[in-house]
Image 1: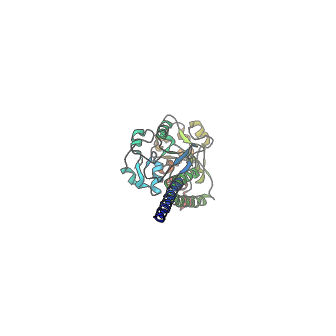
Image 2: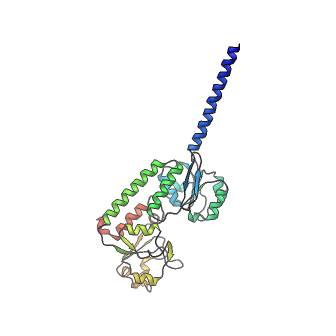
Image 3: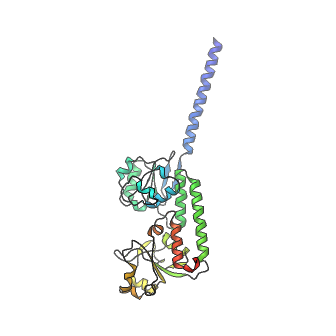
Length: 303
């Protein structure tokens, strides 16, 4: 009888040890699933456990997430998230400048991928509700690539991200090699004429697109996205002017506008309208934008 009691006691202790070991392993596994990265604003973003519900508050992040195979995990996007086509059918959270905080919270996301246009108050409210928010704001192509890799870490798609960014870097090299022996041309990027003449200066990926494509951005002395005076543009007299479809001015109209019609680019018809999303969305298609800018500046190099 005593022997049976001892055996039972040993069995119970063994069970407790095994159970304790299981609990310990679960805790260790949970710890392994906890990841912390730093976003572009310098904030530490910690996500615990497997990411199964994602909200994207920026079209560029939506493109990145789909490229990383995270389409099924996306539960909410902005009204402007239209690429790839599958994004159009995701539930909407509002615009990218004014998303509904209440709507996002109701979606119970594991993480929200935002941008600086999302707004500080929106980001703060989400974080106050214990929702991790990663804010992207790349100022260069390399910054875009870094964002993709960081997002890949958060959602558990590091291999997808590495393969994608490796392909992007290979294409960058191919494009820059094609224009490396071309004579540099002065380029003016006309971002908008709403409330003045807006362009992209240093510390923007637009500036880097121009320089890597074999051009010299005449607004590189500016920092970020800024207004530039027409007199400065006239003084710089660019070889060509690039804009996108949604610029507030039809480039053809510049031929009849005071000041603008003095520019060599206007007189020679070197005015080009490119596909906007490839240029202004800091996502995987930014390399398509680079290719288009390079072909526009140095068409002979791609014949």
